[in-house]
Image (cartoon, rainbow, N blue to C red):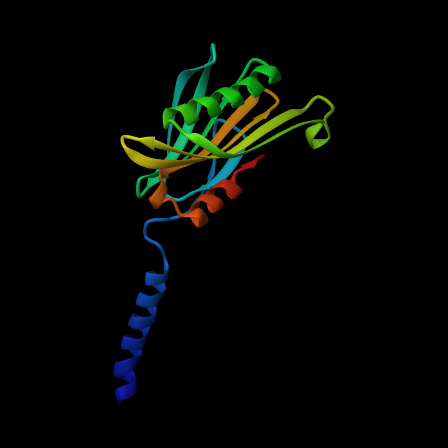
Length: 181
């Protein structure tokens, strides 16, 4: 007679343990852009906004898709330049603007540039990856960014927030999930 009484208790306990193992703050979901050919995993439901921005004298419509968890912003911005040269220039301009925004010092930076991507003799690509530290409103901030151009399109993939609130595991999850299609 005691077995029927304990069975619901055990099922409830196991369900509680399973739910406790999930992080309620990070609810990862796959996202495919309607505006640009990329996919990424966001840690919460993202919002998308588009506006004209000035990137060193070049005005372009930029679409930003972002989600915020515990004060940390996970975002992907994308736009299209008139040509590949201007897309490469947009990559550098975006990086510079974001670093200046938090008065950051770049701790590490990697750059890459290649031609003939994806079997096309006319495809061009460049990328910059950074990890920077700065201050915003008196609080230590960290910026991890990937800035990339592919032909006329350009992208910024960033995680930015209070240094203490940024989990390297969550940063890596977001940054590594970004894929161009």
